[in-house]
Length: 119
Picture 1: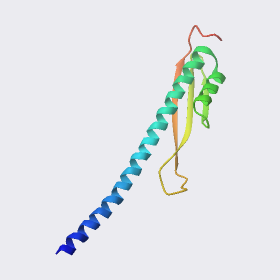
Picture 2: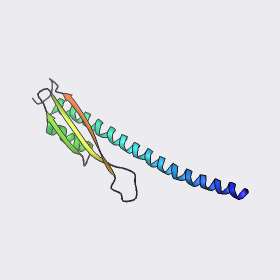
Picture 3: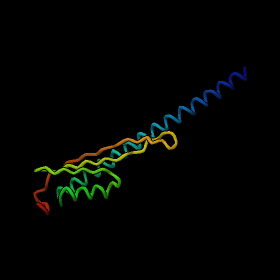
Picture 4: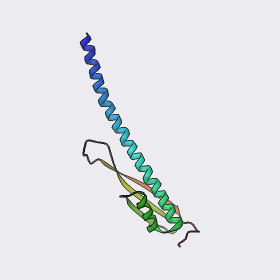
């Protein structure tokens, strides 16, 4: 009877360890995705506000590239506002050398300031 209880304990620990590994990977993945989304959204907001207040779409794109290196930046000027879209690839947790990546995009729009330095 003692041997059976010991075997049950070992199998429970083994299954629990594997379960904890999967849960830890899921939490790390969610953390990376949410951090990446927050970074690009904040950078897009700052770049759109900068471009709308002080410059143009090119200035906003430069600011966005400075804030988020290796990102794809799209800046679109409209008559009344400036829109910025920033996309980055976030590496996810997976097997070793696995190319698991997810693209995260942040978008922001800022109205042109009537007091901006360039028309």
